[in-house]
Length: 155
Length: 155
Length: 155
Image 1 (cartoon, rainbow over the protein chains, first blue to last red):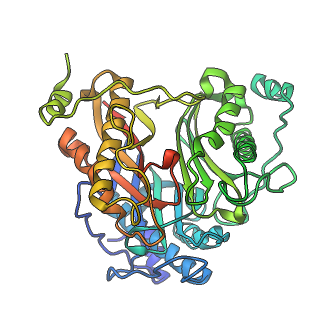
Image 2 (spheres, rainbow over the protein chains, first blue to last red):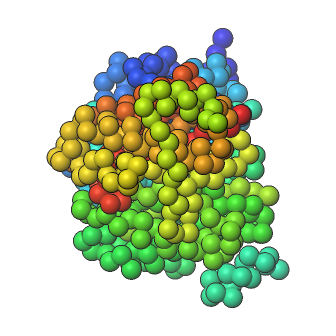
């Protein structure tokens, strides 16, 4: 049976799929003490297709980037569920590190990342408010538009 | 009454202003246990204007970038003060993550970041020495020249 | 006398040299509690020469980048040895943050970072599996092809 947070997400139409395991010598998450570090998640939908591909400021609009960041956040939560079994065990979203595939003159990274920040607060309420860094990068794996890593405190 | 570290900074002409709260679903800092994660700070002066705008290697000199990184560091300390009430509670500056808005051939990021590292040691002495990563990014929010995130150990 | 992990590395032909101290107000590592944060390491060989210089997708092949990432990983372990005295004290490799100097259309950062991930598992086995973020950046210090930062849990 899903916990309160996951039911809350389901009521908003968000279903967490089991994350694919990386096909390499790294893993989706590592817990140390009560800190859970989650690997950078690309903006993939449940079928494994990119929600947005290419660069903000060139190929991808801010609105599309915002939706992509939301997708990254959902994938972060899928990893947290795989790690803890239940999202209710999250005491706090500590940090999101957001990487936006950017043309050199793109200055609106925060509007993109808000798609992830809003999802965290939609899921966890006040416990979802996090520290955040947003930077525009030159390239991302698979030419994804957005990649986000996360740090969570476990209750 | 300001603590020893803050008096030390004031003697060097550095006054910490109350940081603006982010106008989004994230916050300036999150504490978990004795670790304080501070969000990426742009090179804004106390009036909210960018100290340096654009790219190192194109629009901004190393000297201007160094001053911008110092400004980021001051903004990190303003967040730490807001979090802890008193900078004297900092046991150690653990890590700075520095993002330098860079033209593709700019190789002097460390000289830029030294502006922040020097400020941390000016404030905290030996406790101010930190681990550091310096990278050149394609774009930053508001076209800022420098963004720096911080991690602090609380006594 | 070297510990088991270091003997294991030596049997694979990997010798850890004493890392150079940064010539600035930061340090190679900071330990807080049982977490060891290691500064971003460039792809330098033991003589201090870059293993690969320039950008993936332009000047550097994926194979060369993979070897460069392996070099960064060796330098991370040299810092860990300097910090702890013995790599056997590592309980877990928690996180690698990988920055690949990238032309704007380079999408194969993960294949580059695998050079570091594989080295961690070659050294530590299952304890070497880590969370990871891979991004393509516009520029790196000294025009290095790869920079990687690390987080380790100490036993």
